[in-house]
Length: 112
Image 1: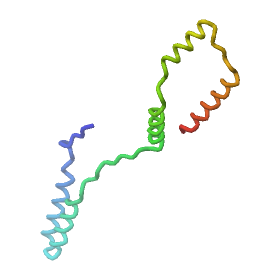
Image 2: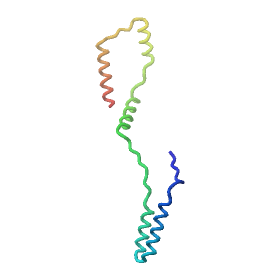
Image 3: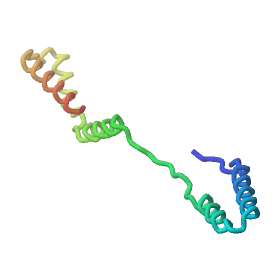
């Protein structure tokens, strides 16, 4: 995002400069003090932007990395299962299904 710096309020800087000049004319003995104060106020570095990553963003990044390491779907195996279901040859083992569901849920917990 671009920031338009052409519309920066310069009246505050002008006011500070005029005040420093008035102080310098009013008291010759404090001339060096006024100049050092003016130099200090003008030489301060501008504030810089900073970015922080929330814990949720870090968690999302870790989850994405884990998902990237999971192998893709074996399309050949999917087609074989579809064919077996269509032909009535596919048998479901309820115990194996329950074990796989429980294992899947545990893997999901580990992602957090």
